[in-house]
Amino acid sequence: MIIAHLADLHLGYRAYHRLVPGEDGSTPRYNARERDVALAFRAALDRVIELKADLVIVAGDVFHTVRPSNAAIADAFRQFARLHERLPRTQIVIVAGNHDSPRAIETGSILILLEEIPNVTVVDREVRVLEFTKLDTAIMCVPHNALAGESLGALEPTTDAGTQILVLHCTVRGEQVDRLLGYVSEFGGAQIDIEDLRIERWDYVALGHYHIATQLAPNMWYSGGLERTSTNLWIETGAKGFVTFDTRTRVTAFHPVATRPIVELPRLSARNPGPDGGYLEPSAIDAAIREGVDRVKGGIDGKIVRLVLEDLPRELFRDLDHRRLREYRARALHFHLDARRPSHRERLPEIPAGPPRSLEEETEQFLRNVWQPTGGDIEVDRLVALAAEYLAHAGVDDEPLIDAGESAG
Image 1: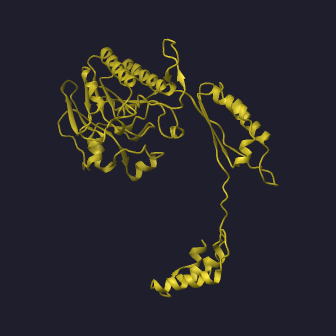
Image 2: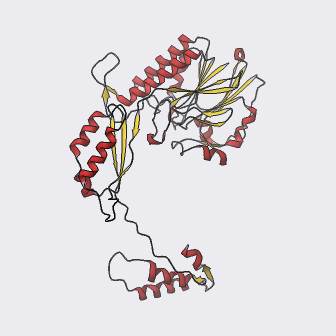
Image 3: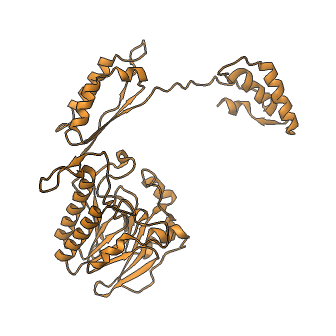
C-alpha cells in the first residue's frame, strides 16, 4: 500500500499585494502568492495521482485561516474532487490543524464541507480512530483541538489492523527532536512529547505543522509545506513537497514540488573594511548591491529576493540609488532590502579579579567603575551611600555572595 502524506497546504495564503491574471489570461485579479500556493497543491495532487496512492493523508492546515475566501474553498473542493475522480478507490483523510480550527466550540470547521466528496473523511475536533477494512489499516487521528485542550498521555493502537498509522498536527518535543528541527514551529500549535507517541508501536507517524520536510525517525516524518508560507519564509530552506510511505517495503520517499524561486543575496555591510574604519560611500554600496543582483542566475524577475544590508546608518540609506532599488522591486515579485542600523553597543570594562566581595562591595564596584550615567549631574558618592543604606534596610549581611573572579569572566 502506498500512503501519500501531505500537510500545511495553507490554501488562501496571500502576500505582497501583487496581482496576476487568471489561467485564462483574464485581467489581473488574483494575489500572486495565493495562486502560487494553489498551483503547488495541484502539482502535488498530480504527482499523487501518478503514483496511484492507496491512501492520502493531509496532516492539517488545509487553509491558511479559519475563514478562508470563497475562492480558496471552491478551489480546494475542486481539487479534492478531482483527486477522487482520478483515484476513486483511494481513501482521503484530513486532520484539522491550528489554522483550520476555530477557537469557539460552537463554530464549525469549514473542512467538514469536504466530506461531501466520496471517500473523504475529516477529523476536526476529537481524537478519532478510522478503520479501513479493505486496506487492513487503522488510523488514529489527533487534530489540533484534541491536543490543545488537554494532555492525551501515551498514544497507542486500539485495533488489531495490519497497518497502524498515527496522524497529528503539532510540535513534537524532545531532546533529540529539538536538535533536528531547525527553528521553532509556527506559533499557535500544540505540543507533545515524543515519548508519548510510542513510535515503535506504529507503522507510520504522519506529522503536520513544521514547514520543512524532516524525518524524525525511520517511520515518522514532517512532510513539510507545499509552498513557503511561514511568517519568516527565509528559514524554509530546501525543496518543498510531500512524502510517500510504502507499507510493503517500509520505504519513505520525498517528492519535490516546483515552487516560486526565492533568492537570498549575499549579505553586505556598509562598514569600510579598511584600517581607517567608518562607512563606505553610497556609490560603493550601490555597486555592491548591483553586483549581487547581476549574479543571480536567470535574473531576479518574478522571484522573491532578500538582501540583508548591515551597519547602514539612516543618513547613508537616504543617499542610496533608490531609483535602481525601485527598478528591482518592479522586476521581482518581491524585493526586500533588509537594512539594519549599526549596533552601538560597547563592551563594558572588565572588573578586575580579586578576593570575594560582599553584595555591598559588588554594588559599589559597579557604580564607581562600570555604570556610565546617560545624563545629568550624578553624585556617585551619594549614590553609593544610598545603595548601602537600601541594602542595610533589606537585611543583607556582609557574607561574600559573588566571587570577583566569576564576575570578571
